[in-house]
Length: 296
Image (cartoon, rainbow, N blue to C red):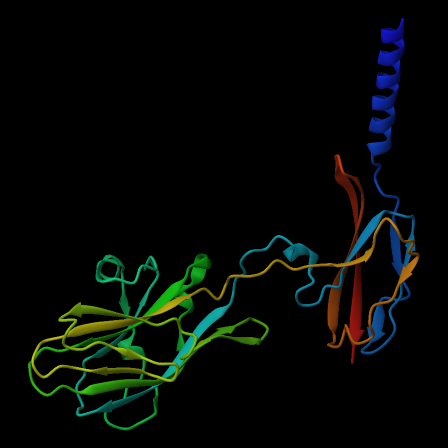
């Protein structure tokens, strides 16, 4: 008899816990105090229902619901520019190269295994003057489909005599987004440069500092030296994030974002994601979407 009673108590407790951990679909509705607002106006969102959690996606940059799982974007442009100085010349023995399949191992074998595209005819290089601007080079064709690009400067000699000197004075790699936003990806100091000697490493190598890249050839031996950057991918993106505005411990019937949040005219897709959850169950969620227009 005691065993029967014990089993009954255990069964009752298990059923009770199971019911306690069940979650229901949130009862949730959202309205706004208008659909068109001027920059700086107060916007109020009114809620019906009482979900356990609410996350607000403003629809502004970095807060778009549709980008919550995004790891890369499209349409960005990788733009490069640098300044050069050549002395004891001119000699056309500097090449500017780019690779999509360099594996990131900085040695001669890996350089030879990679495919390199010559960009030298797309840039302006010094013929004796200092601080010669290369012009801005669009590298987007090498970074489509979420690919990365590595830049290399190659110095090579074909005769043994007094060699010329090349100096890369400045370097800038930027990400240009479709909306006009420009994000610096690297300067000379943060380019991740690595020198690789392909021939006669005792003769001469690239000198790397935070302010320049310098190569002076040998007068006693033929030489080939590369200096490679880190890889660049302008399409890498951090997933957008919403703003949690309610959890299970609070009650919320309305929400007013900061008046300077929508500071640019345009139409914004605002999303509220409401969830109920327990530690044992997948959250039940309801997503509500509104469109608001901001005018000057």
